[in-house]
Amino acid sequence: MPELPEVETTLRGIKPYLLNNTIQDIVVRNPSLRWPVPVEQLSLLKGCIVSSLSRRAKYVLIHTQNGSLILHLGMSGSVRIVDSSLEPGKHDHVDIVLNSGKSIRFNDPRRFGCLLFSSSDPLKHQLINHLGPEPLSDEFDAEYLYKQSRNRSVAVKNFIMDGKVVVGVGNIYASESLFLSGIRPTIAANKISKPRYEKLVASIKQVLSKAIESGGTSLRDFTQSDGKPGYFGQELRVYGKEGDPCPRCGAKIKQIVIGQRSSFYCAKCQR
DNA sequence: ACGAAGCCCTGCAAGC
DNA sequence: TGCTTGCAGGGCTTCG
Image (cartoon, rainbow, N blue to C red):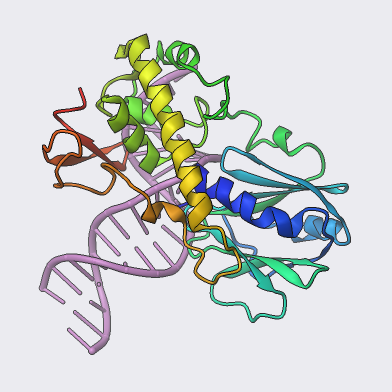
């Protein structure tokens, strides 16, 4: 379940191995991901040097002169750095083989992830071009969020998880951010005042940046076989804590379903 | 235009 | 112990 911090950490982890290195081959063992892997197009990248890497929302973008790779980890995807000779395991669907003898190995049991190709600017790709601002950018502020919310009657939790509003706020961090800002997840987005959106924006930024920090430490070594996402080890206050005492007031954390996703909150602290 | 629901997929946990 | 069932979730797609 990689959320934005895990994706950012993944990007940082693979960067040293990819940047300025040559792609020798891209081996696709199973093209049936969220969308079919375009094997033919990917072969255009053979022999290309990776000129830069970036991230947009939860997409990792790998740029070369001949085009870019667009990688999404879905909810069960992960990558590792391996010796290219290492025998692939179950669900190791794609290898980006490098001249260095190393490979970036993509594993995704549930195959909700994707690997796509873009011959021009990947930010113009149709999966990406309509997305809202990055949560950690200056563009994402209370003024913006308040304005966006005025004609939206959806629950605020769904609202902040809407990629057209803001990207990278997944189910876990949505619950956490709302807890930090004292806002009940079920409240309609258009019923929330601007001062409360100030708090919410600050909480989202805080939760995500802290997670990136801790992800950076727990995921430092991408050559380890158990490069598990880091958020398990970090301090979640309400997510998955149904029945536990609220860390602020001690009341029992509640679990409800909003928009077919489980949500956690404190009925006393969050109004 | 918006909002709600459906769908893809596998691993794991719970129930029998 | 071994089956079946249900649940989890990102985000696009479809339906109302």
